[in-house]
Amino acid sequence: MVVYLGAFYAYPLYRNLDLSLRHYTVRSFVQGDAPFNGLDNYRTVLADPTFWPALAHTLVFTAASLAAQFAIGLALAVFFNRHFPLAATLRALFLVPWLLPLIVSASTWSWMLNSDSGIVNAALGQVGIGPVNWLTSPDWALTSVIVANIWIGIPFNLVVLYSGLQAIPAHLYEAAALDGATGRQQFWRITFPLLRPVSLITLLLGLVYTLKVFDIIWIMTRGGPNGASTTLATWSYRLGFGNLLPEFGPGAAVGNLLIVLALVAGLVYIRTQR
Image (tube, rainbow, N blue to C red; front, side):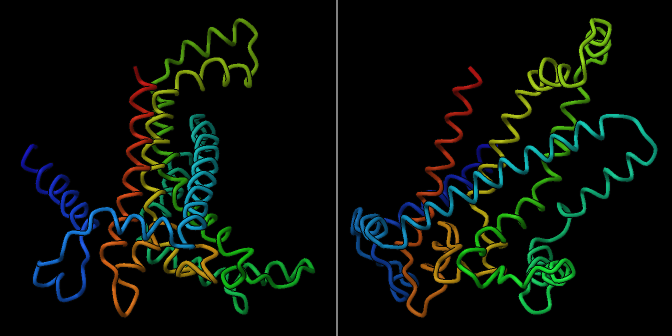
């Protein structure tokens, strides 16, 4: 385990940190003789006009995705916790978005939200609503990628929260029913409190995953239009690999800022578990 953590976590983290503290060009990246420039890359990133909008988009994207994924996943988990015909089959079908490769899911959503030939605009046209430029309008681009990410993340929340529901003893509900508790009271007094440990780890894992979402945004909007859906993850990629003259140092610095955000979330989780 120590060897595994060192090879696949500690060393890459060290290399990324070193990358952010040096002035790399394509030549120095190959030869390995980049000069040390301290925190200049971080100053460059923080002074860039793209930083604050990208940070805001990242926080909005993460918060909206987590809230919707958790709420819908919890509702579905409670629904499937009841025994009824075809429950297992329907539950399995809800796993499809989670099992599909992200490139397939993102491409499908790009087609559905296409301004000219998308099925969403076709459906809106049937009820008298004009076409919406979902992916090419600055007002709708971020919303579109959030909706796609919510759809992809719901199955994960469903599976974890459903397993948590299975661990709650049935006799608690029976006793509550004998005491005259309604279904809503049973949820808020039994289900929700006893799901707290599972809910916290679900939200933490969802937060760490959502902070670094890149594939969906890049395939659907490439962070556009005009940076309207640019997040720290897509900006880091664009700095390091999306330009003719890559900026490896600033790109690594943005990546390290994402790591700090995830680390803060992990520390909060550990604190709440004490």
